[in-house]
Length: 608
Image 1 (cartoon, helix red, strand yellow):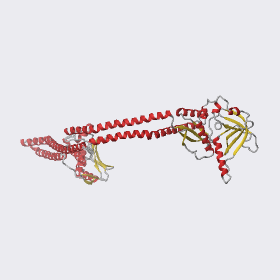
Image 2: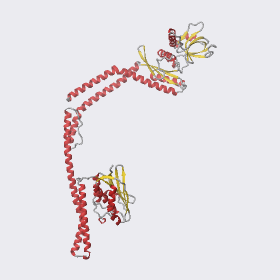
Image 3: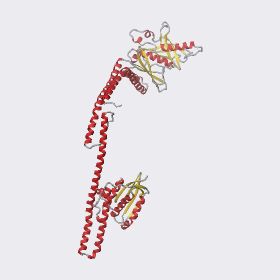
Image 4: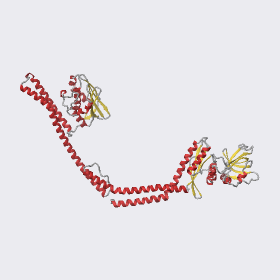
C-alpha cells in the first residue's frame, strides 16, 4: 500500500514516542530489579573467584588469609570467611577452650587427650565482650570440670554441648542446630519399627586447661556479633555434618533466603586443599542495602537517559536527513547530468513521490549515457581512422623518398649515357628499390589495418612447436648464410591464437634476430609452459640494445644505435606489426638485454 510522506512522518513519530515511553516504563517497573540483582550477584561471584585464587596462592598462611578476608569486606561491604570440612571457622584462634579428657579405658580414642572446643557455635559473643561479666566468663575457667556431648563423624568428634559438673551443673552451652538435628534423628528412630543407629553420640568428662575469649577488637569479633551470619553458618555446619542434601558441596552454590523481609544471597564455594580435604568459602550478601540501591539506581538511569537521548537525537537527525537528503541528491545528480557526467545514480528506492522522481531521473541519465557513450565511441573510431590515414601517408612519403631518390639518380645516369659499362648494375639497383617499395607499401597497409581498430582476430587451435620448426626450416638458408647456430628447446603444446598472424610474429622476430646477430653466433629458441599460458622466447647472441631504447624497438621505422639502418634490410615495420598482432590477441610481450645478447618474448594462451 502506497503511503504519502506526511503519513510516513506521522506514523514514525508516533511509534517512536510510544517506544520511548514503553522503554522507560518497562525499565522502571520490570528490568531494573532484575538488572540490580544480576549485577550484584555477578560482581560478588567474580570477587569470590578472585578471593579463591588468592587463597590458594597463600599456601595456608593465616595472616595472609585474614588480610584477604578484611580486604574483601572493605571492597564489597560483605563478610567472607573460610570453613574447614566440619564447618568450623578456619584461621581464627581467639574463642575456644581446651579440655583435658579423663583417662577412661573404655574410650581409648580420647582418653587422657586434650580437646580444643570452639565456643562461637555455643556462646553468644555479646555475653563475653560486655562490661558486665557473663556466666560463661565467670564459670568457664581453668580447672573447672565439664561434661561434653560430642557427635562422632568418622574419626572426628564434634562437640555440641558443654555442661559444668558440680555445683553449677545446671549451666550449659549448646549448639542448638546440631542438638536439634540429633533430636530429630532420634525421634525418627524411635518412631520407626526398626532400630536404626544414627552416628554414635559420645559423652566425655574433663578439666578445662585453657580459656580464650575475644576482647572485641579482633576482626573475627565482627563475624561473631553478626547473628544472621552465625545462624546461617551453624545451619550449614549441621547440614554438612549430617550430609543434608539441602546444600551442594562440590561447586559454587548460591541460595536465596529472607530474614525480616530483607532478601539475602548465600554463597558457598568448595575449595579442595592440597591434602585432599575440602574447605568452604562462606559469604552472605543483602540485596537491599539503601546506599547500594541508590547508587545502582543512579547507574541504571545513566544508561537509560543515554539510550533515550541517543534515540531522540538519532530520530531528529533521521527525519531531517530523510526529507532533505533525497532532494540534495536529486539536485546534485541533475547538475552532473547537465555536465554530461553519468557515473552515479540516485540511490532512492522509496515508494513515494520522491522515489518516483529519482527513478525517472536515473532512467533519463542511463539513456543519455548510453547514447553519448556510443557517440563518443563512433567519434573516437573516426579519429583513430583519420590518425591512421595521416600516419600512413606521412610514413609512406618519408620512407619512399630514399628509394625514389636512388631510382631517379640511376635513371639520370643511364639517360646521360655515363658509365654505360655499369648499365646492368644500375638496372639491378632500381629493381631492388622497387622490391623494397613494394614490401614497404604491403607492410604499411597491413599495419594501418591493425591500428584502425576495425580488425578482429580469428582464433585457431594449433601446435606452436610444430609452427616454430616449420619457420626455422624456411629460414634455414638465412641461418646458413651467416653460419648461425640455432638451438631449440621446444615443448609439445597446443595454443589458441591466429596461426597465420603468430607465424608472421615469429618470422619477424627470427628475421630480426638473423639480421642483427654477428656471423657464427648463436640463436636460442625456447617454449616454457606456465599454468594456462605459454611463453615463447627468441634470444640472439652477440649484440645489445641500449637500455633506454628497449621500449622504442616496437615503434614504426625505429632506427637504433645498433646499426639498425636501411643497409641491414627490412622496412622497420616488422616489430610494430608484431606488437599490434600480439595486442589484438590480448597477450603480453617484451624485449630485454641478456648477458651477451637480446631476448624477445611473448605469451600465448595454452589449450587446457
